Length: 271
Image (cartoon, rainbow, N blue to C red):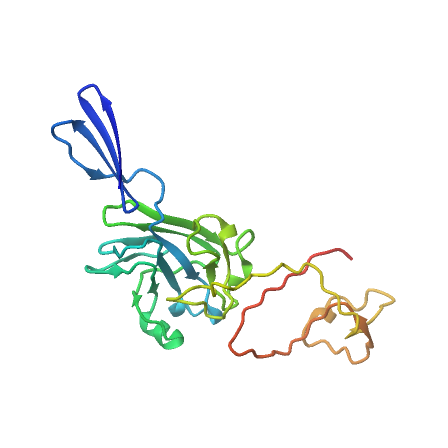
């Protein structure tokens, strides 16, 4: 708990910081009245930690937002609200224990069935936009506690946009606004209600070059432009093309992983 008292003549201005909440007062020294200060920047007491804004197969019933209590004490969320892309107000007697997670879902029953998660609130109204949205968390006095505006393109992780991965904070104690503090979840479906990543996990380097000279590929050198763009279609018959070796290729076959793991790939370069 911190007090800052600034006397101005017979009037005292007092600021109080307690449990991450700022309170201000202006008045005579013999009759001080405290009220919450709702004008300053967000306080990360309870913060956004994971967001499923674009579930696989565009199933909006599986949209959800996760909060994390960054404090070492329990926080009462009664009458707190999430606003912006979605709207939700927490009911009375809502307590988020110290260091714990809480999920707000578009359809709590659907999420519990799909992911087996507990401590789910909802439903919220409206839906999270697949192309980007703003989320704000306000306490019962209207003070802004956390805020972020995510997107579906760089600098935000593009793999969270419809691949089945969630938008997950790298470090649960980091600020929510910077895109660099977020990545796509390691598991399809995310990790609602629990840590985004194991504490010992290393995210590893970003591989920006891939070379496999022994991989098989098909190639064809046309003598004119009669081929057009038909070769880019999945139904194109390439049986007459000659086999060869290539550095990287593409195949429509699907290889299943257990448990499912989300991987993101992108290509960039010149020919």
